[in-house]
Length: 204
Length: 221
Image (cartoon, rainbow over all chains, first blue to last red; front, side, top):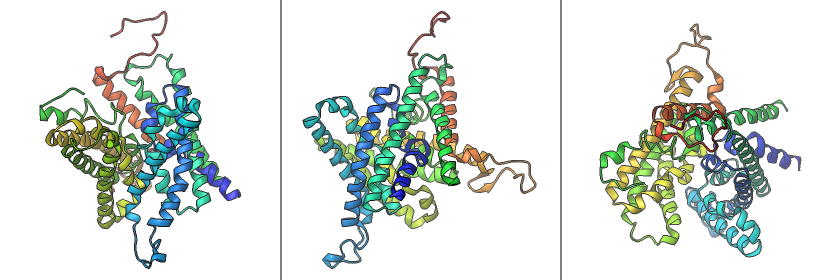
């Protein structure tokens, strides 16, 4: 249990997706101009990561991992090179599914967060969640916790950046730095802050 | 993007003026993650340019046969297949660099640059201009990666391509490596400063003010 909690905290803060691992930066920077939009993106990310990572874990272990077809008399069959296509398919399908479910049963949530869902199909952080799950050979429970933790870390980071950028809308910045330039510098400063979490983890 | 028949313009525009990383906000994730050393930056640049050019070519060839509703899936499958090939080649012949790049080669699949270009350009153009545009964007992306990768490796370790350029203080030289350059924040700072530099030279890229500061309003340029 404590292991899972540790994994959750690590995924959310120490290995923060956008700020430490540079994942999902395109949407991180493009959609963080308004805090509401940023928060919506963060919530959608958490939901999708929490669903797709464990789902991909099942698919990888059941169909693609070396030796997964041993029960069918094909013990040396190794389909792991197909994992990219399989993961992308699963992600696209579950994003579509999530969108339909939200639209049918929770129209209010769909109206608020729905526009970000299709974007998430091509979000590198989502695919990276599944690829890290394979690389670090997580169990099913670990991958679910890892997915949720990474999503939460992304949500925290993007909401914070959104808030700071709104505040900076009134600042008198040099012309060339306005917009994207200052967003990078802000992300760099936040990344310095999150680096302290890594130090805390190392100190324990 | 306006229709251009001029191939040279299509090729050179994305280098600085329409640079995918600094202006279009595409493909940033990998641009920052793999730039701790020049070798990984160059490998990533070559892989991405190859994938991007081939994907644009394939999408453009079958552009009249892709139903509009499932075009994203079709494009992703084409890109993913190409990425798998590149990944296998890297694992087979450049095992060390492949390990250093970790999951980031696989992430070319979802690199917004690739899908952005196939979606915005290759889908509406003939194969030759589509591939030229993709190649140009690949070069623009590579340019940024190599600049940042070079700076980070030079100041972080005093090396270029793993060869000692600046003599280290530990080894009797004068250069003390800045280890911050190898950490995540420096990549953000460098790219931010690069954006600033480019936009100071090319004024038309400057983003519009959201709020004009009151009282001391200068006439807008």
